[in-house]
Length: 272
Length: 272
Image 1 (cartoon, rainbow over the protein chains, first blue to last red):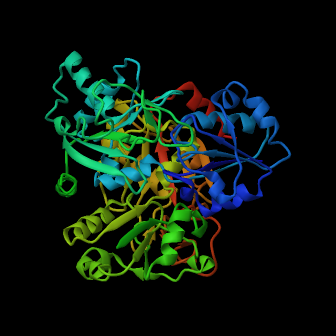
Image 2: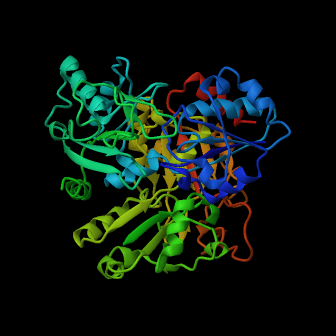
Image 3: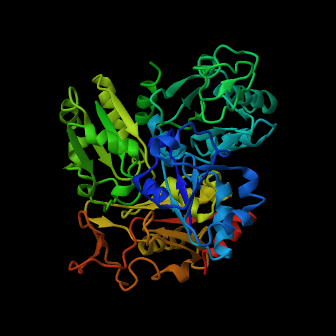
């Protein structure tokens, strides 16, 4: 039996009672940290989990599943276990092998965006802004604005790097320079939502020009990436000693479509 | 201080450790049950919560907030506390009165739809199918299909009634008869996802004609609505004695847009 269990938004306290109860009765507990950033500490819950890598769950999934045939095995995933759609393939492979599975859901960025005051049912397609060049985020923004829908931008995460809000905003402005459809400019008012789910979360609505360098890597204008730092908050490049308080991951950017007056009121309250 | 705390998808075990810890230290605990159906039992967690009604939180929110000024007050909400956008207005009013607030997120239908194998970022706008006549669900389906996006349909809930999947599917077919744009027919393959988050959850992908009467109120063809039955599973109309095993609430319908081959593989596995 394989349980996919969501750890929730921020740290070890975001797991559900159901999730914790199951973990405690499992013979083996694994955790993956490659689909999202998570900085909790499972030892605070008395849980010892072995980290599995992308290659364990993608290229060698047969081997991973072999272990779940006559045992209870938990795979812990930051946020909700199926938001990163890669884990559906594990469920599908398990089904082929007649291994039972159960998914325990948890909070994720899609729950959290309600805090912006924007109505969930007015969001259009979600886009990810990747480190590599892609037309996709700008194209999705265009489609959504035609529908008067809001656009949620997730920011890229790789084995080494985390994208900051600043980088994401700059990439959107660069796309505008290239495609020139007048969708977005330094004057555009957008939402940035950082350190989501923590006590220090940052939720701001303002013109992009006012947000650039006021969120995320405020003291670095050279675009140096945030580096991953397993189990702790991310670090800036070239600043590996001690934890940096200026990071903002995990964070998202939202470009609103047409605003209802209640949405406008709420966003206005985020400016102060 | 006011805490808005999500109870999660199904029952009292779906609250997070963080949520429970806060509830336990609060002076007053309230619960609202009008934005969604929730059938858990808080007494299993040693929590006594007083139910608040829509009018308490909408028309008389000032009075409700007055009580939170020099106390710690928890408002428990089924699913995630901000998915039903009505609760943003409480946060806004609290801000005006300089009352501190904190939101504790939880699992919701938007986390759960990952179980369909459909990719979250390929969903378009979300629609609700209301009991009253509305062109909106069909219009949103049309917009989304143009974008090749999937459409998630939530089903209406009122003070007295819960919409079943059967009713929702019939309303969609009726819209097609009216608007005749060829978006949907009895041959269209759709997903129904019922009793989401429970051990008995139903997840099927099939032609509408095969799903009608195989989910939800299978033995009733007269369209009698499901009735709310506070604290327990919903009942069919005219069948108030005992719990009915044939209900399916909470449930959603998904009409897929263009399918990626991995999505197609996963959906195929839901047919058996």
